[in-house]
Image (cartoon, rainbow, N blue to C red; front, side):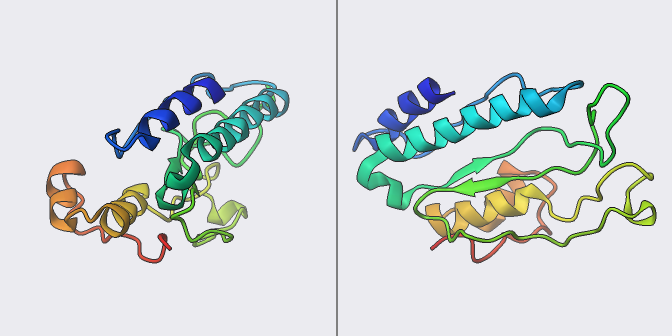
Amino acid sequence: MEQMARGAARLIAHEEGPRIAALAFEGWDTHANEVDRLAKLLGGLDSALAAFEQELGPVWKDTAIFVATEFGRTARVNGTEGTDHGTGTTAFLAGGAIRGGRVITDWPGLKEAQLQDGRDLAATTDVRSVLKGIAVDLLGANAGLLGNVVFPGSEALQPMKGLVV
């Protein structure tokens, strides 16, 4: 993860380099013994984020990093000590352009009646609104085009405000 992050950051830091990069880190589909596996993976992610900051240098102040997974986790541990494919998940933002130091959520709760289908953390935020907010406020993207072209079918979903410094 760190090596990929360093390579991407070097490209982005270059004056004529790209403004956007997408990296995929494999191995997060942990169905069993999650504690040890996730500790190693999260340590790698931490190193990758640190590498971005280090390699970007002065460009870091204008940078937003969005970290997410394509699937969520259940709220309850199963028999193999895993939390296979639920709906609830999290996304992280990092970078010098991010107004950080906080958690943004509509916490649904973990009581049985609050769980979706009695097993999953209920989703409360569409990550497309987060990405739209960054694209509009940091990159100057057109919100209408984001809803029609980049995220088709999300026209009614407003960009999340207040994410960018």
